[in-house]
Length: 353
Image: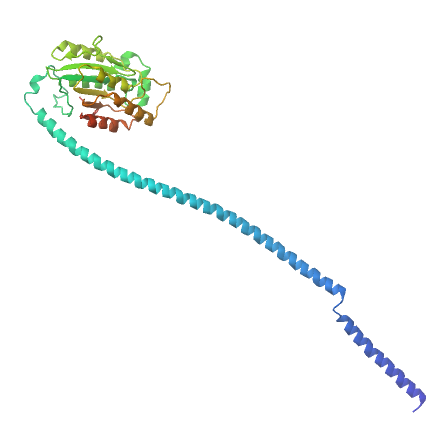
């Protein structure tokens, strides 16, 4: 082998060794984990993913907070509704018990009134009673009247409501007639019916009895002038006729002061043994008067409760109640007054007497 061949083989072996070593270095360089660029990319990717997850978490937290607020509001509404329903249920239970008690009391009162009605019908059937009347009163068709009112007694006191409300049954008609002339007021159907009722009642008085007649509105005044606190004899027909004539000319006006009317009962000496009241509603004023244009039903009930304290005990009070729009508490209040005093109560129909 020549020297040149040996040199060529040795040079080729060096080149081959260099290529092998260089390839291994490049592979090792590409796989080097300490490469800064690769680590940066990895960290940036992790940061991006973290920010995305953080934004998602914040959005989820806001939604949860909104849901919590909405839920709290709904819970508060439900709690308030439950409380309101419990209160209504308790009130309903109380009202039901009170209504049952009231119905039982009314049934008991009805039985007592039926017994009283039978007793009065037996008294009305007495043939001697008709011959003791001083005056006569004949209605349309010569009708037989049955009221249950206790018209008898030794001393009978009539108290007749002469307030402005006696001008009509409805408020609008009362206001309209209140501004009319006195002649128009006297032609009011309701007032004429009240006068006719007094005419019928006086025709039932026993001949040996005494009577007195007062009208009342804001104050109480005797129908016959100069007879204040004086008993008049029924058998003197002039007194009754003159009283009825004066009553027909008495013009309804002003408010209703029941305390003034009831005070007449205790002022009479000797006191009456029978009182007949013709009225259309609860009082609207007392002795102090009032500057208010309207009055509530509760205030009228209060005035009624204060007024009945003026009535002496042991005297029966008979009530004839005429219709009045809106005064729903009057029938029960006056029925209780008649019942507690041993008198009678009648709601007057449009064709009586």
